[in-house]
Image (cartoon, rainbow, N blue to C red; front, side):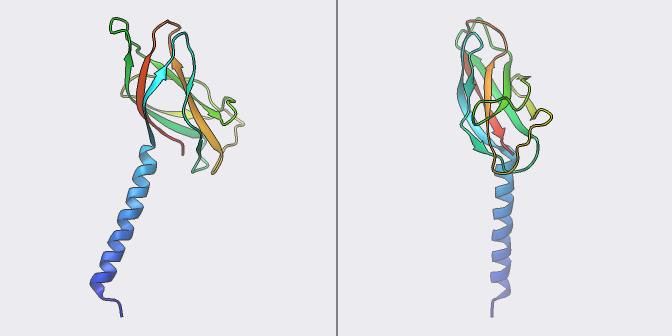
Length: 139
């Protein structure tokens, strides 16, 4: 016979596991110091499997930095692509401290298990390069 305290411990352990899994899914996958290329060159995250049927990914920008301290990068454009580099969404401009749902275009059907990546570029067509840090939830 299982003791009541053992059941309580088991239940608490399961609850913590579920909560931790939900927390990881809510915050997404962090990216650090992704290169912002000059002259609107693109940089792309790794490909990830979607874990829901929602027609979006959520991107949170923590910080944007420029290699030229006298010319900051204020905004970076982000959009969703499939594993072959085909656009799934329009471009969304974000600055540091911003969280945005990147909505898929009408007619795009991506769901659980489909591979998606996020691409970024400097919002301004300049010779400035830099770095961006944040997290993206490929839900």
